[in-house]
Image (cartoon, rainbow, N blue to C red; front, side):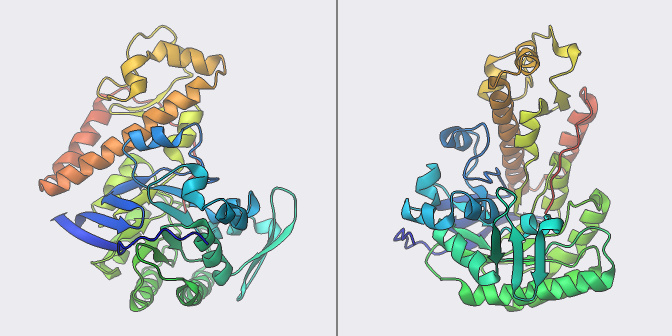
Length: 388
């Protein structure tokens, strides 16, 4: 297992408030994270279509990788022998690793779940694997993740309350097993995951039980899985007040800019989602004026930059017409440039949220973002799966 020799203690410092919203700083073995923060998703030790230095240039301070994918290929032990995930992917900043529970649970036809953990077949070659809470923590330790996520079960949307309750209670038992298995080191942390579906009492029970474990950080899982934004916000309204005020709060798998703004206003500090990168690979852009689909023929002779309000290299250098051409010609540069822009857009949004909280004008900032989108020329954004 990789040793970094860090003497920095993991922690969360609250710097400012605006209502329930928090402006803070998370310290880790590999650097600090200014919050609210958005984590680009680098599932298989890469943010698709981006070099690590270019990811950093967007303003990102932390990335997310995934236990499930890395345990299958190239293997956690292999990465450990090569110096850990930071060295392997040439990312010197903090890394959070999802435990793999969500990916395993999505393989309903390929897995068997019991109290001990989950046995599943690899989607790559059909080989059999078992993921227990202890093994999930061990893998993330081998990867040298700054933030380790507990193994949990993410129930499907629409599941009956008694089944959601059973799942939530098992996730709590798994959280305790993860806590016991976690190897404490300066600058490293284990996060628990609040479950409970859309049921207020179950969410409160889960959050309170996890708070009693006194973990370094907490996440909200099981949202953005089809319940709708209003329901997600309602769940956050009852959940975040139960989460410790002196620990970071992470909403998993969210999301669209409006989702992030609403969640920040309800006290969430950290986010991740495939939306900006996956959209970038499918010709869909986020701009100050709303969403833009670069495949549409209306852009064929458009000499304007993608987003005049954006200072990213894509917007500073290329026209909508050129980006349209790249996607029509299926040139790989198109996804690269649009992914870069989308990540910059998200990081600019987070910087704006941090400043607005510091200045006590978050509601006004949220209204400004919404007004710019209403005044812009929005195009339908294709369905992009997210959620956790």
